[in-house]
Length: 286
Image 1 (cartoon, rainbow, N blue to C red):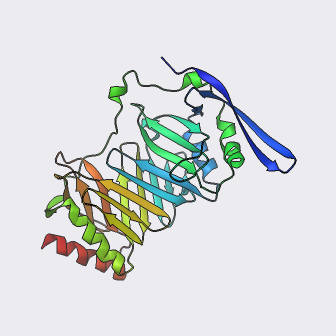
Image 2: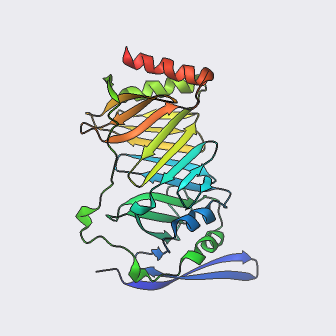
Image 3: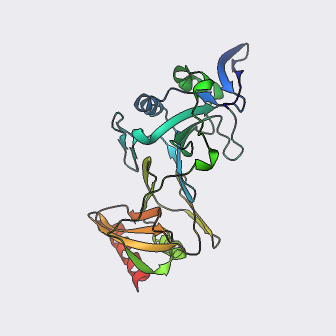
């Protein structure tokens, strides 16, 4: 049964003696149903100076706090100088908004997008300093659905991330996945950029970053640079694989079933950064 919906009012001060009010119908848990017009939604959000784009699956997440990449919105191919998003809208199922402050990042609101099993694979969040009323104004034109129309999987146990398999061209490296930690440190210590790509069946999210913070505790890896954050949790049987591509060699983290968890590659096609990346990979093959 779908959750009962109630009326929710978002009221925030816009001046000392006035108040701006936006009212949305919500589910009992606060979800605001949005129209799944993917190209128009992304094009509208790309006009905002800064949002937090997060893609994720069960083992990793990739977050960029920056303007949403622009490009061919109808086809889902978005790109800028440091990011690229490739979307398969056919596998996007539903979406909703929430207007509540996030405990971990202080964002005043977010949009959650789910796949055909009802599993969230992407969030687009307001930047932490965004006025809540301003974020409400961004979503109001898409909030013309009844909460009763929100997708709910028939069986919550069926909810799952759909993840790609490792390329047949990739060959295993003689090292465990924890070797990615010193590889990234080798690049960061010299101030070199790296590329990272998180893929699910629904979306591919690629970003370039120069790591300024790398933390690894034996199980989970977190890398930051002030704009991008990546987090990876891998099991003891995860392994690194290398694949030759037109842009250079990519290192993939995969599990024992050859499921692709996360990929790292060269940020440039030549020059010192590319050479440093290739040299760092050689240490993994030794």
